Image (cartoon, rainbow, N blue to C red; front, side, top):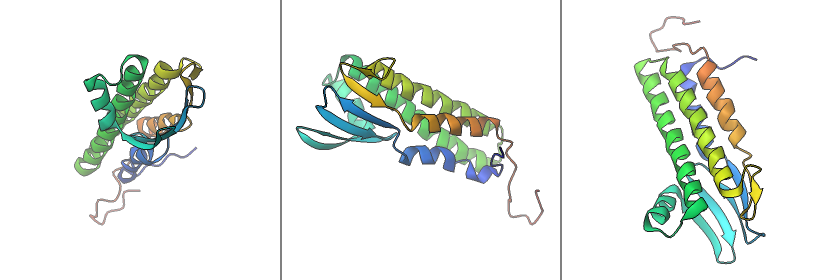
Length: 168
């Protein structure tokens, strides 16, 4: 399998993870359902539809409105999302500064993010992603690990810096 090698595309990889749904979930015995992206989630319950950001999650935990397993789940998911954003910023700097080795660091960070996202689902729903709290289908999380692997093992070239020389 040929991996992408132009380092200029590297920042797009974690950016994809910010727009792809990463988790589908059901609350309790179908009391509500939701779709979760890295930075926000959309859920519908008997109270109506809600768009909930990670900033809201943090506020709910800090205020004590959300506690227990759900609070742990929120903290793990939010930490994973923040690490994804940081990896995107690291990749932007890597491209701007020509730091090809940073691609591997970002790949490792994306993998850590994936572990935190899975841990969040396990914290809420159990090791089989199902329990009394409902169930979860982390369908986008495997993509997190694929992108982490591509970033980590990729042999990134310097790309075309606009100096007119052939880098191939």
